[in-house]
Amino acid sequence: MRNLMTTAQSTVAMRRWGPPGLVTLAAMLAFAAVGPATAAKQARQPAEAVAPREAGEPIMAIVSIKSQQVTFYDADGWILRAPVSTGTTGRETPAGVFAIVEKDKDHRSTMYDDAWMPNMQRITWNGIALHGGPLPGYAASHGCVRMPFNFAEGLFDKTNIGMRVIISPNDAAPIDFTHPSLFVPKREAIAAVPSRADKLSAEAEQATQAAAEAKKAAAAAAKEAASLPASLRKLEQQKAKADSELAFADKKVAAAKTDQARAQAEELKQKVATKAADAASALDAAKAAAQPKRDAVAATKEAAKVAATKKAEAVTAATDAKLALEPVSVYISRATQKLYVRRNTHKPAPDGGGEVFDTSIEVPVTIRNPDQPLGTHIFTAMAKTDTGLRWSVVTIESGDDAKDALDRVTIPQEVWDRIGPTALPRSSIVISDEPLSAETNYRTEFVAVLSNHPQGGFITRKPTAPPPMEMASDDGWGGNGFGGFFFGQRDPNPQPVNPRRQRGGQYQYYQPQQPMQRSFW
Image (cartoon, rainbow, N blue to C red; front, side):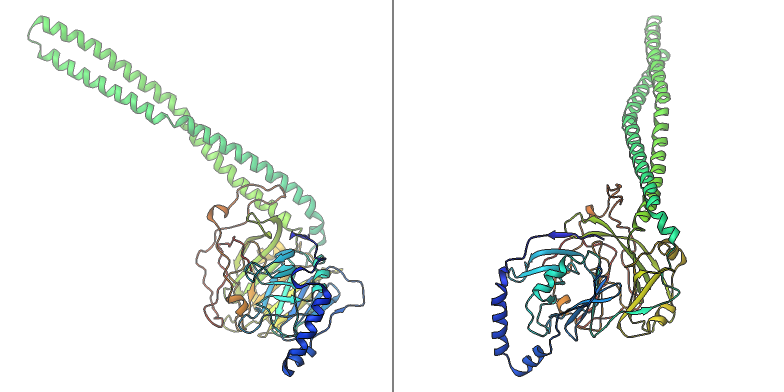
């Protein structure tokens, strides 16, 4: 995976919060001024820690609201720990499952008086993020997760778009886990991915070009035939007029009383008959000439339709092949009884900020005893093994234990066959009672919040706006190998099978109509 930063400016100057010495002095004065209860909270603040080994790339971060601490993990265990400050009462940081969607080295808030929020790593588009900030020793933010300034700065370049962020109400940690339902990749399938992706990408480009040419030919044929109805109508009118004149001449011949009148009428009739014959011949010739053009319109239209179908199939196959090079994330919701798949295309979002995630797979699943809670479990492929992948699980909401939760879900085999053989480390499967949040969109992996925990920092923020309709599709084959923005048209009014209510109002869940507009905090 790669880093994508919308801003990459230096944070050497402390700017809003002043130099480190002033920050320390301010913290000391603040500590001296607080009461015994607050001082006790501060005294229990966790310390920063670094694992005594060489660290790999972070795979996940777990924030404990209870302990006010964040822990980062690589494939072999924890690597970094630090105290944090989550949302205060009324603006609580939502507990749930997230991923980094944007990074900004020198972010300033547009909501909170231009407040400096350095080394910002956004996890929702309505403004929840991890960033550097002051830590009083207790939950004090407006919903974000504040980390120590130096810690946030040192962390910034180590993480990537799409890294899992888990916010847990209580302390949680990954534990080793095995289960037959987890992905078991095939070495030969993974080895074949690059060449297959190149081959199918070339075929998609050819199909796209062929579809464009067929569409152009159909348009040209239609344009050439566009004047036919008017031309034929004019000739038909001329013939009808000539026939009418001929009929009038016949009546005049029949009504003639003298030889002279009859001769004049016969002469007129002959002229009119010639005119009528010429009009009929012209109409017949025009009709004969028009038929090939009409046939060409029908043929090119059908050819364009066939080419468009072949293009769609080729683009889908090529997209799947390209996506097989990326870790795959799966979300299974008891509330909607659906399975959702996300993979990062690394294609920049067209409206600015973040990257596009593929949303092309969303299918129903069968859950045994659907009225009974599953809990919320995050299964993560930590590393390759000789037999496949080594998995861990993090549970942040009780229900069934992780094994039983997986046992209760029947996943369509065709989906597993499509994504399982090429699954890579950092792939994940999330099982939850919750529906996806409405903040899940084409620029996110998954956003799912625990509805039975406070979410003040989420609810008080303005929801991400829906996208302009003209930006909701793209029929091209992108230069990076991904066509379109993957905005499939699905059920326009999905309803949870087992809806859950959040504190303070109706739970806002994911709708396939993807949000586009960037929010600010």
